[in-house]
Length: 224
Ligand SMILES: Cc1ncc(CN)c(N)n1
Image (cartoon, rainbow, N blue to C red; front, side, top):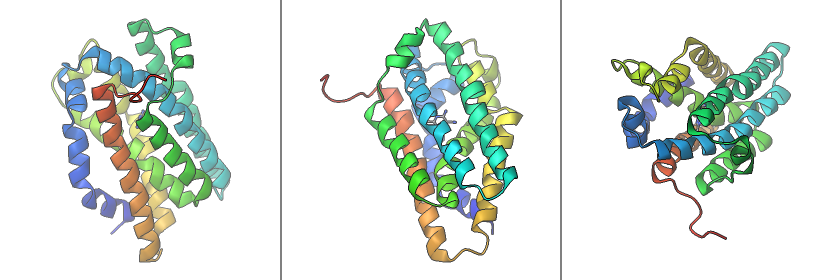
């Protein structure tokens, strides 16, 4: 069994929880409160800045030119395609560029990005891929599921979000990452696989926490 199949099977319960979260369901049926989505977009913009840095680290840790190039492509598509969606939503919300620039990460955003950067900087290439994969894979699964709902991808507000994350291009990048993790883990000892499973589980948990934080618009408990 490929390592990605093992992960997919083992982590189904938590993946189902992510899909069932009211934030995700609200995007799918178009009922999500727009203020919650606004909060999410700003936090996600901050998240993506650090997330893109992981691809730069991936290029550094890669052992061949082809893999380096693919990480460079991921870096480019995060900064110039995925984040352009956030800028489009910024216009819809009349969010000034300055508001994005001055925004501060919420505790969950900070914990999530710092965890990934810690793993990416200190671990192996397989550790880094295990950390970033749930982000790509789970968004693609969610995008595809929501895209199947009649009319969801044409929703005047949330349709564009669904179109982006269910797109072929996004799916191809997620698939490349899945294949890379399978190649990197081929023949690895069980102890190493368990460590990678733990990293994958942690960022999958952070994905749930990110939806939940956005739904609750959760910032620091004090204003100082
Ligand atoms: C929190 C989060 N996770 C994943 C993705 C998809 N790149 C995202 N935009 N934001």
